[in-house]
Length: 149
Image 1 (spheres, rainbow, N blue to C red):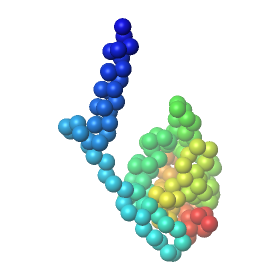
Image 2 (cartoon, rainbow, N blue to C red):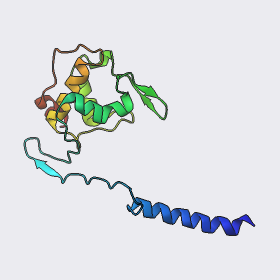
Image 3 (cartoon, rainbow, N blue to C red):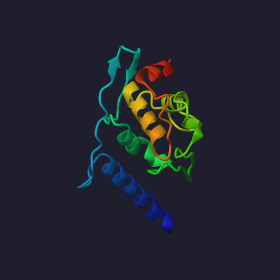
Image 4 (cartoon, rainbow, N blue to C red):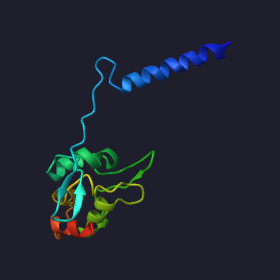
């Protein structure tokens, strides 16, 4: 007896879900479209910069803190998000630049979402905050550009 009721119910739920996704429910927020692709000839790649922040701390809050936590202590749950706070692997700027550009073990790379200056800014912020004091060897946009190749 349940089958005849279940199918129409599932169809109705699917229809409402599709309606909500298209923005048909009152009060539903619409997604902000991603900025158009822009070409930056200085390093020969096309960048779809999706983050407007330029400050390293703001970039960390907008991108990194969701997984690595606002305090940089990392998390374990649906995945393993290593701590950035007090992390000795951040001592040399080349390693975190490589990780942010290319990703590592499930972490996506941000080469197409951040420009060279943004990556340098967030790497420098992480290396000098969250209990880290790695101010020698700061990341530079030129270092990020080289890591992209």
